[in-house]
Amino acid sequence: MLGHRAYKFRIYPNRNQAILINKTIGCSRFVFNHFLAKWNATYKKTGKGFTYTICSSQLPQLKKELDWLKEVDSIALQSSVKNLSDSFARFFKKQTNAPRFKSKNNKVQSYTTKYTNDNIAIVGNKIQLPKLGLVKFAKSREVEGRILNVTIRRNPSGKYFVSILVETEIQALPKTNMSVGIDVGLKDFAIFSNGTIYDNPTFFRSLEKKLAKAQKTLARRKKGSSNWHKQRIKVARIHEKISNIRKDYLHKISYNIVKNHDIVGIEDLQVSNLLKIIS
Image (cartoon, rainbow, N blue to C red; front, side, top):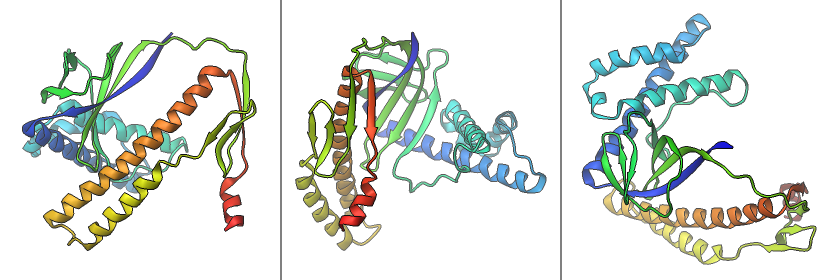
């Protein structure tokens, strides 16, 4: 059956491409905040907000008033408006909180652009992106399926990543007729009803010490100085490494569970409350 699948790769933009990525992120954030402010103001006055159609129709005029918006990918700006509209739709359905203004100080900065007229393509070990041209990326596997959109992200460590959403044929996992119960505890990470035990990961200990040392060094730096920025990146990279290791550990366990079992039961022991009692 057809389904959506996402691929994530690290990209290596050159200096000019990195500058344009940062400009596009900033412009997308500005457009989102601009229409969010107008949406909130209109709602306070009339009790009704905007719609995607209204915001989208006002975007060309905004680009005429602000020439620097023309430097970046126009589809990325339209995507910001669509994201705002979708956020309000989920809010009115009481699925999420009201949209908030985006800040340039957020840890992860990103923008999304859609596939249209072959503006996105994989060419060898490079990916063609709107306005950026061909960008080198770490092609760890083949991208299979029809490309729908891509999201470019900049992490706090200064690394850039691209997430490619595709529509492709997805094969269902074979039935195993097996079930398992999972007990999440304190001493062990997880205990399965079939006797399998996953220990709590211990490989964070050395990284935690390294992180504490790096954070102490950062605290001694004058905020805003060049040395402070260099140390901030070092701290961010340690955080990123810890996050990657944790995600890898959890993904391997979850994939093993889904692959080998049809029914999974999890016992909720309110571990947070147990920790309060113990402490």
